[in-house]
Length: 56
Image (cartoon, rainbow, N blue to C red; front, side, top):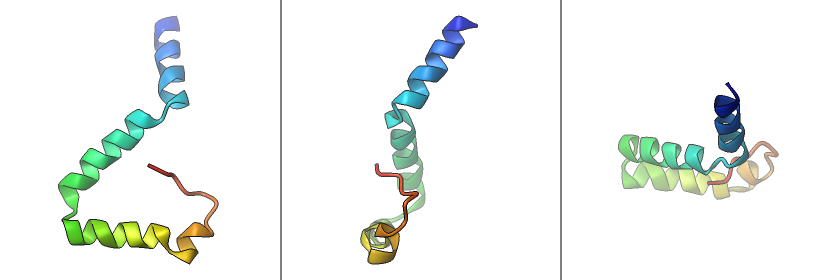
């Protein structure tokens, strides 16, 4: 059980694995134009005001 706890601690401390998983998943769902729309949204003033942003 300690090994499992150690793995969970590592995965929740370094969220790069989550970002990579999302990149792969989103890549399979969006075309270039749709991905650009999402990127523009997150660079907008309204999105920038959000304090719950996740940066990949």
